[in-house]
Length: 507
Image 1 (cartoon, rainbow, N blue to C red):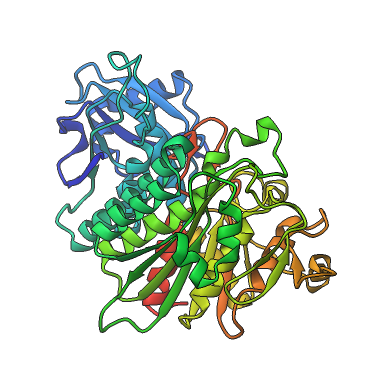
Image 2 (cartoon, rainbow, N blue to C red; image 1 turned 120 degrees about the vertical axis):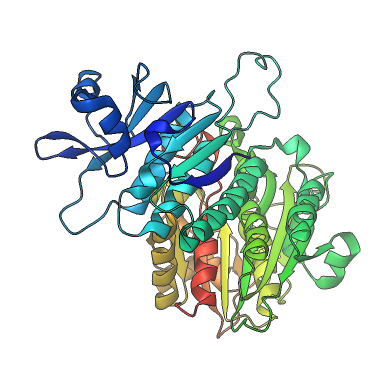
């Protein structure tokens, strides 16, 4: 993983391969962002005209390279756009800094060491260091485990990033670096898991990752399979997994925050390691990205490792159901009825709506521990993409204050989300004539109906929120900001922020 450090030495004299400065759109044209003073002094009055001549406009995430011709120790200055200059009395938004840093670091692949001045652009030093640090570490991500033919020519991610700021010994800034490193490490783990092909990540391997990474960080790990699942009454997990030669798992991760812990939280993450649709088979093109259907599980596992490394004063119990949804002679059929952990029965009318079936068991089990708050995350519905697009997470809840708090925390973490309702009139669409429910309702409002289905398994009195990350978990388009093509690590930063808020009793 890329290393991150602080320095108070002038950026112009930094012994690095490139220096990153910020530029923005001002009322009269291109302006330099704070932090670029030493570079501007070294290059003189020609810096802005040279950048303008190269096409720099200050547009957010726009990257412009300029050879320094010996004026600075670094041979190259990279100017990255921050968008419009903030109005008087305000600062650059943390996510603007995070994305700009990520864009610059991505553009500098092949460089060994880079200095970044963006942490010095505003008054809130810890928040800026955190945002810029995360942007740098996440922008330097690459998944090359399976690349073999371009080893000699491939440009590797930046190895070292130095954040230039006025006081490198500032305790709050150093703490922000540590947090950025822990969070970025967790996001990178989630990305790696989503990017791993399903032939190498069945439920057994995913469970082992939880044991290795979360367990290795100090989290207690228990894995339920086979007879233990049957004895526990986990009919949804068993039903979804029974069509595959690779048996399902339910992983329990437990973290105790010590004497200072006042809040008990449950996390649940969907872990479908590959989704063929089962007997309700998906079209071939719809399967192409279904290795990402365990993005919720990846987020929860990575979050638990981060929580332990950050030593948050909060108790967290995570339940991660894992299964492979495959068609075979043993697969569940439309019209089969499954009995769940809490005794409810569900008529399966679509085997491709399997995520909610494994989540239901895990949610029911998590409620038995009496958490103050329960949050689940899942790549659950195509309807989420239709409603909110590929970058915005949908948040539903049985408590309006919790839903608002989760959306707010996600925004501060840099993960766009939007509050969605759970209309009571849609619940009728889940009625079954022969069981307690069917697993899918009418096409209209499909994302909301899925949330209503999960709500049925939440014990009364438990504050619950549901995050649908079907779009945000996997980037099918071009890389942008600090977000690569492929697995994004969605929801990890949101979860860490929410847990920090709960630990500090801000939520």
